[in-house]
Every structure is written in C-alpha cells, then in structure tokens.
Image (cartoon, rainbow, N blue to C red):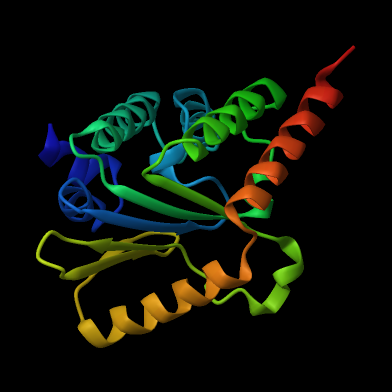
Length: 205
C-alpha cells in the first residue's frame, strides 16, 4: 500500500517526510493556497481532492487514497506525548472557499478547537504583510528528538525533504520572522472566528 502511495498518489518526497513527521517533537508549518494538510478536516480534504478528479488530474480511487493517507497521517497529533505544533496560516487560506460554506464553517471551527489545545500554536499571517511575507513556497520544519532539524517544501509537481543545515538555518530564521510579523495567538483566534462568522452570515437564508 505504501509503495502504491509513493508511486501513484503522493508527491515525490512526501512519504519520506511523513515518516519523519511522525517522530518529530516540534512541527512548524506554513502553507500557501489552502490550509495545511495536518490541520484539515476530512470534508475539506475530500472537497479539494474531488476537484482534482473533476479536472482529470486524478482518479476517484487516487483521491480517496490521498484522503485516507491524510487521515492516517493526522494520527501523529494524538500520539502520547503529542508533538508541539506551530502553524502560521496565511489569511487568504482562511477565506478561500474550499468545498463551499458548510465545509469552510466546520474547517474553521476545527481550527478554533485546535487553537485551544496546549500543544498547538496557531497564528495568522495577515494579508497586509504583502511582500514582507518571507516565504513564497510552503515550508515545514521538524525538530527531532536528538535536536536535529529537517525541512520539507513543495513545488507544483514534487516535494523535497531538506537536510542541509545551512539551508534549514535560513528557513528557521525566516520562519521566526514570519511568526513575529503575524498576529498573536489571541488575535489569530479572533480573526479565525470572524471569518467563520462571515461564512455563517452568508450561508443564512
């Protein structure tokens, strides 16, 4: 099954990364275009994958396998002890209507629930950061039990697990800068709630 996922369903580099992610003590996340997979609801993930089927970029079987893989991957959030999660969410990711209003309302509620957990820090990078946002690609940074750092990023077609210490140091500095420039935990939760209420308001009769 894993061999099939590596060669048919997932981006190159992602299976290798996920193995390391499951062992990390700290996971720092930043994604562009949509909410990062580790924080997605099943409905949100399924809606996104279904769009690939409609475009002819994937079969329904591949889409289902990707969603199943994601749900299995999310088990790392429930392990004992759980990893410490730091996620910076681009504001546009909160507002992009994946799956329609009902799906987005539940997804935003899920983020609100995650934000209450002691091992999770969610921040929002506001739109007004503009060109000062340091990343133009998604970036994940892992800290392992021995203190070693690993990174992962993706292009449109492929993913890459980064091990070079100098590159990872630069990524970590940029990530620290992104966190400083982003909204506080409280301010981020307030914005997530506000966007959810906007979806609820527009969904009302």
